[in-house]
Length: 219
Ligand SMILES: C[S@@+](CC[C@H](N)C(=O)[O-])C[C@H]1O[C@@H](n2cnc3c(N)ncnc32)[C@H](O)[C@@H]1O
Image (cartoon, rainbow, N blue to C red; front, side):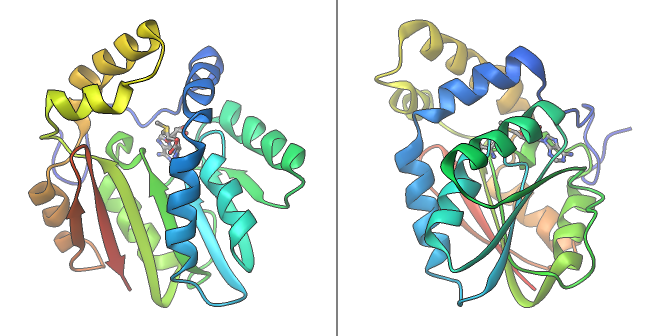
């Protein structure tokens, strides 16, 4: 039975044509990935070790690798995305380690990373509490994890604004996915705060915007 620490769906990744479709759609969000990367970079010291969990095609990891003085690692459960992200990094001339694995069972030693980012993925994790505890384990003391995701109580207007400018078919597909599967899986500010409270982090600072939230978790 599903509880706060497990969810009813399987945490399978996105493979094959779905992964390619997603990569094409989000390739146009480069400004957003650059903005997030610059904001994260502002929190980091030279030589930082950064982990992106569930990077998909790797666009945020790539922008991070361009702006930080340090090393970026990515970890995704989808083999299609790991291959794609490696290829995207190679084309960009950047050295990023993209590995295959599960957010709830990270293949990294304790206390390795200064910062962890996880965008547009946390709601899909089948074992979210285990994923938070794994983030805590692999962070160094004083390290920070940032979870960016859709808020469950987003308005129709917020989604309309999000898809504006996309081709009508893509906009319709995105709206349908947001209003059905993703809305079901997404967290409210309160449910995300509750999960953080149960985790090794003990708490999160949660910031809302019209369509999503950022949960800042500090070890
Ligand atoms: C919607 S995509 C987001 C990709 C990217 N972070 C972005 O911002 O565009 C969700 C990602 O989560 C990954 N994923 C889902 N469950 C996972 C898990 N348990 N462990 C690691 N990655 C997972 C999927 O394979 C996919 O890459």
